[in-house]
Image (cartoon, rainbow, N blue to C red):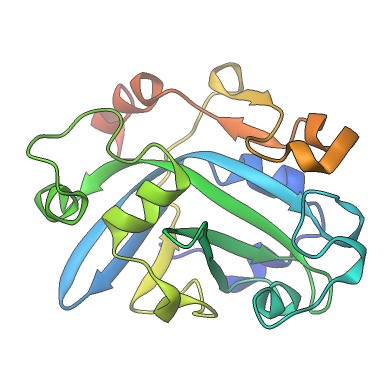
Length: 203
């Protein structure tokens, strides 16, 4: 079942980032399906978060999509090389977002390998936000796309991630944010903890 857009309107982006663990993200691009389980996220808490692109109310052509109502994708290019997929959350003009840092491939693995230039799968295939976009085929064309579209969407398939499997810590690569770089806004679950539960999901 696709997550309704109302899910993303929650005002606690940190809790939402944790709740996204175990959800499935899919793309249907060029008639080809690919997707997997979200296993790592980072929360960016709007205008008061020094690590956020919207800190201090900054509003540019690049980050404008962060100010949309929750439930759309915010995609940007990092270092001119890697696309990053974020889910915009909260109400319009309150620029919260969740970065999708890793996924566990479950659908279209051969396609993902082709996109990544790899010959065989490994736990690292979907580990890292740049790799997430590469294996899902995401680029700037998906910036602003609703997260319940026929091209990009998120599903709740009933996969429950036990709280004792969820790890929490500081975000990665935001040292410029000073004390905010230490905030425990990153959540992750190990692939091994996910794999053992897939057998119990309804088909």
